[in-house]
Amino acid sequence: MALRGDVSGSASSTGSFGQIKTGRIHIGKVGGSTANIAIGDANTGRDQTGGASASTILIGVSAGKTLTTGDKNICIGISTGAKLTTGIKNVLVGNEIASLGAPMTGNQNVVIGHECAEDLTSGTQNVYIGANAGHHAGIGNTNVAIGAELMQNNHSGSGNIAIGY
Image (tube, rainbow, N blue to C red; front, top):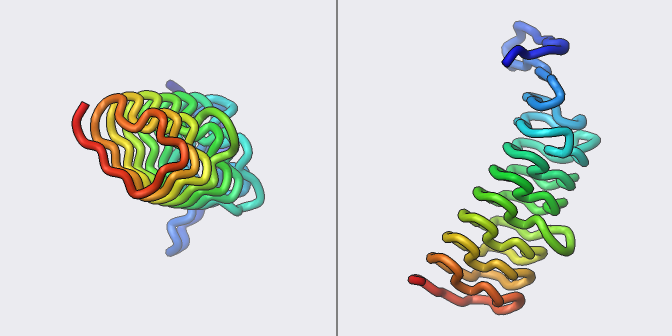
């Protein structure tokens, strides 16, 4: 694939090289925010503006679509983190994670698997690993579910642990 567009840079000691922008790949400034990587479609990182969101990696169609001020997030997958707005330090890997319902403002969540924590909103410090684990998680905190389809309907419970299938 050929990169098109302007590539700017400097030889300063800061290592600042601006951005490469093709419509599908953005490296550097994304919507005015610095130190970000966005690879996907026009909706990937769409709402990042004003330099408020930094050190974020978004890979996938519509990944991090509504992210505004959340820092240090990693969203990899189709529609993954599509409703993430202000949450920080989240790691979301898999398709359609945090993609439905109210905006996601939760912090420090680790979610790995297809459609895990699809409804996650303000929940913080949760770990969901496995297809559909924590599918309807919403506002609960400090939950751990490792295994497919575990804690699918735990919307508001906190401090739970489930391992297995």
